[in-house]
Image 1 (cartoon, helix red, strand yellow):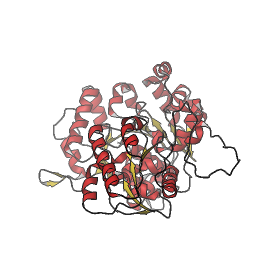
Image 2 (cartoon, one colour; image 1 turned 45 degrees about the horizontal axis):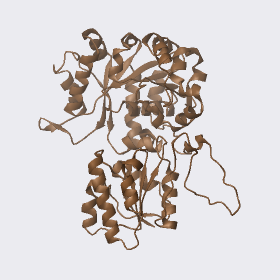
Image 3 (cartoon, one colour; image 1 turned 90 degrees about the vertical axis):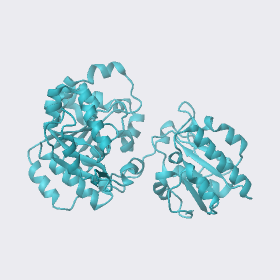
Image 4 (cartoon, helix red, strand yellow; image 1 turned 135 degrees about the vertical axis):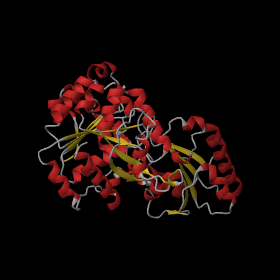
Length: 461
């Protein structure tokens, strides 16, 4: 089967999800907005078209218009009426595009209410398209109050009763084959030498959107590979992104209410972290909140500086590395905790907007004394590094980020900070969420980058 994929930057990952007999007819990413140019250029369309959420511009009117043009083109130019299937996590899409599904019988929508759409959803949809052509495709998941319905991967024999699936079957964990590696370079020896008998509390902070969670996750993975005991404390209770980076944790939180409240339970009883936190692997732990947790009274009682200080006091005696995922705006509520943090990893991409946003955020959140303390205890992590970015006609190097911050643009940054490391930008930075494989396990470049960053953060400020 020849397939046209319209999935934007998700293209590379989507191609990895396909059945072996499926051929993708174009090597580059396509979005809905540039699909007309592709089709009018006489390029092949194959036997079916698969669309994912990443193809949309987030402008509903424009997206609907572009999708209508595609469906009209297929109707006019395809004698076999090739199927067009949208696989989406947005449960509103069937309502927004309902008129199109009624108008075009070759267009179907598959919804999946998982945090990320499992690979088997794509494979099953494609297999069904290849077998049944334009036959309607059933939703993968319905509303949480109804019975879960899957595409029929294994048709039942005549007379055989259909086996009902439980609510939790929708959250299938991916096999844990893959990403477990051990570090082999000499950085392990250097890190081992400085980590003997010591512990560091490191807060990964910065303006939201600067790659904080991804950086914390990769640092923890790298520490685990190098034999360090580590735990991530996800303080970002608003977004709770750790659920996306660790699908096993997310699966458990949907089955276990106590684990869904992991962060609150760990703050309440730090000494019981072995039962309240989630064990990722060996000496690698995570405490966060599941998406289903919404007890505001417990949040008010335990999500505060006093409880966090108590937790850090216990954990620093148990782990080599205690990592906090803590955006800058949270420091307003946790100022008393700052003195208990050994070093802040300040995530800032190498562009002027990110630097100014960071400086402004610190000015708004902290008074001058606390801001000076943050400045003195911070090392810069240049995230999403763009090696083509320029500033005043010259390359925007990592050191330039520090230079600008210390140039007087803000009273909050009076001291020049050292650079803890640089995260080279690649598609892997964003695709980690879909694959469950951290960047540090995708190649030597990232392993070295996060290994050196880990070493400098473990040295302290």
